[in-house]
Image (cartoon, rainbow, N blue to C red; front, side, top):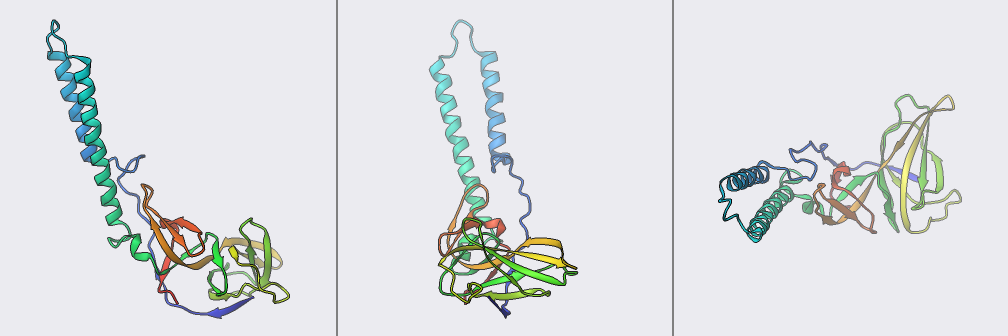
Length: 222
């Protein structure tokens, strides 16, 4: 069962590709240090005394030293990335707000706000709810038109569904034929931010989580 509502939101623009490479930190500093090391090592090998070659332990020490410098450079890149996420505020600033996600969200005692955007040509729109195992638990006709609705978590006989994680899809039909099946964004309170090389994750109330890049809107918790 759903109920129509409206609520102000802030849309988060899609993330733009960074200059990082496959490892996430292929910046000029680390790459430059590596090239400098190779140049120095090559010159050292070319100019050493054949009668008094460098000990293998010296090579090992140089490699270990370089590895430490490289790791420090990568760590600095990572810290810069953390500081620069989400327009400089960082995803830690999202804690306490409600984020919109298509990942499963927790349902307990409170209704869940959904953003429904059916196909513009649909004459019939059904909201399909699935549990944490992906099983369909409810299906209801909500009619055409887009906007925010309150999902109350009730079965067909108006019994409250069990507490747990739920996800939502829309089935848009015209003349009885499916023309679009789409995921529905749901709002859930963000309780934790986790940082990693991929851009970080947010943890929602109830334990569900999603990549920060998949949170498409924020609003103050109601």
